[in-house]
Image 1 (cartoon, rainbow, N blue to C red):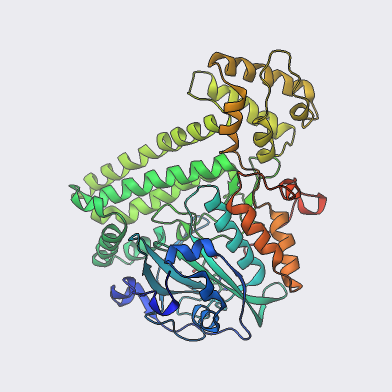
Image 2 (cartoon, helix red, strand yellow; image 1 turned 135 degrees about the vertical axis):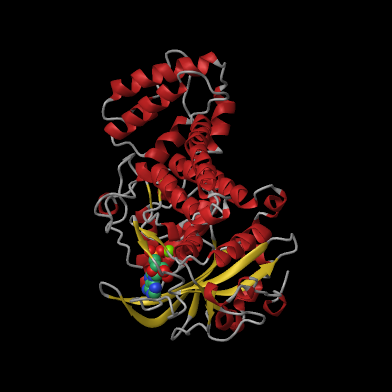
Length: 494
Ligand code: AMP
Ligand code: MG
């Protein structure tokens, strides 16, 4: 376990030439205090959790004073926002301090989100508000708890600083960790500026640090595109299976490592509403839950285009390679999704007819407005004995007969593979979470924190780190939303 002075921070991104980033110091927030600390993320840095008690922890990790070894910078990137190319974005409020190599050889970048103005802030103020910071802190850890790749969160600071959004709010700061924060948009910026040397330099950087096995391939850049495509297909399948809507799948929020990145107006589905648009500012529903798989493909085509100058000569050949990889996306996505859903249903092996069984179920859940996560969790207690009534499950449905029709087919399907109820139930409870970060739960933690009480944040963090376990006494946290929490409008403003 390391002390802060012994984190041995380095910053490989700072070694890249000037247009990649701007070196600068964070701007401290007034009256910064630690609101929540996440020991699970501290482990990634081999950081002794007791270090959080030192005043230096708050000073160094909130940007009041330089963390030993850090070389703070804001990174340049661009991206397609809501389908339109924006030539310059970049870290407008995030500052990368450097990276820590832990004793297992993993590298984790340490980034302060909400650390003040940078050359890429455009019209923003460089700050993050408490509300959105709590949401990202909790959700990134919840997504990790669900076994889905994501950036992580080390800790959360509050402050006395007032930050103006639709109304005055309090400024906050998140310490985010990821092996890399490079995005699709980090490549796009050099493609559209026609700075192909920088483009190659970035691809080489990503391959060297994160995909070293690709360096051996005949065309490492094509290998990079293929690997990112595969990882993205898998990520989106995981989102769809767990009922997670990201809300702002702009290409600047798409990780080159296939991580869930940049938590804004996200939502976990309560009722199964496939067309859910969780971003209040997404007027056209571009990022609706059920459009995410297609949007990811579109985003990958943007990345593929940006990589074209590296994919081969002549350009016709590069385009052909690019298209061949893009064509792998849909089958990869469907294969992952079908496998995940097969496990959610407790089926040992795939069989013809499973897709129909799943389709019928999803139609039923949507038509009857059934809570998605709670249904699958309850399904783990399905009694497949002929004649069993399964009343607890059936009574979730306003139209009980419709459920019974589906359940008859499910029972037959289970019988076809001689499924054992107890073993299946155990397996299903390992993939169907009891606890998800419902918007209303996040909102309760936010409201309490705004009143100065941070206990709810820590309670949620504990539950969400182990979402598949039973937590006696905390059953309320698995409840579907109360009326006030059903349609919380979450805007892009953060
Ligand atoms: P997002 O939609 O949160 O992923 O952000 C898109 C772009 O806007 C990124 O370049 C962010 O750094 C920038 N940005 C968002 N909020 C702010 C802010 N309050 N101050 C400065 N830049 C911001
Ligand atoms: Mg972003």
